[in-house]
Length: 249
Image 1 (cartoon, rainbow, N blue to C red):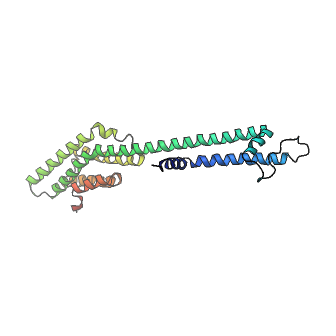
Image 2: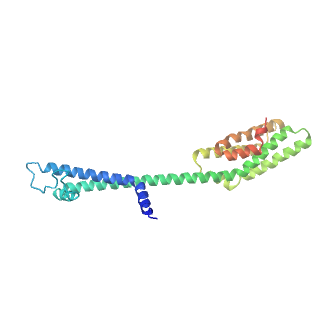
Image 3: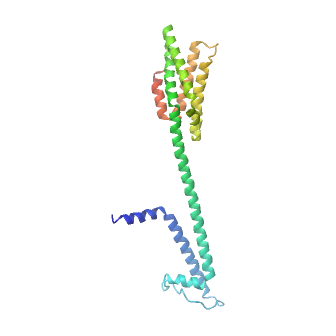
């Protein structure tokens, strides 16, 4: 318990050591300038008689000498004090602005981290649906009979419908607002890829046969993995696992 006051003082000194050093440095320079002026003023032949405040450094009475020299050089002392106060106040203002800028940066960084988590949550369901749909596409490519083809093609249609529903949610559109620029670019790429996949399935090209369409669907959804890896590794791992990406040839 006895060490607490010392800890409090030490913490205060640690937080304000720059201000303390600057204060002492400016004070020392002011005293040095006053000492220099007083020492040389006393030897000038036209100088009026003044109190001998400072003969030698060792014989000077500290801190009485400072008051004596200030009384002997009132204008100079006032100018030095004003300059000292102006410099110190300017530095305090500058450091305060820098601290505010740093705090604002930290707030922005925290907001961006929170915004990214919100964005991940906003598209998580769509990514799960896409992963399952990609798996359905790969199974549809392997289908051998009409029953399997109808089953997996129907699964793809249901997956596309759910993905479309997820993309039309308000949270998906608004999640981009506070994202960091690089995350924003990736998020837009992810959503755009999903929208492209949904749009293609809503209006398939008539001149493409089923195998070609499935191949294009698979390529589009596999491209999503690249964006997810850069946007969020955990979400990419879930997508990789759920879609059985590692088992595809």
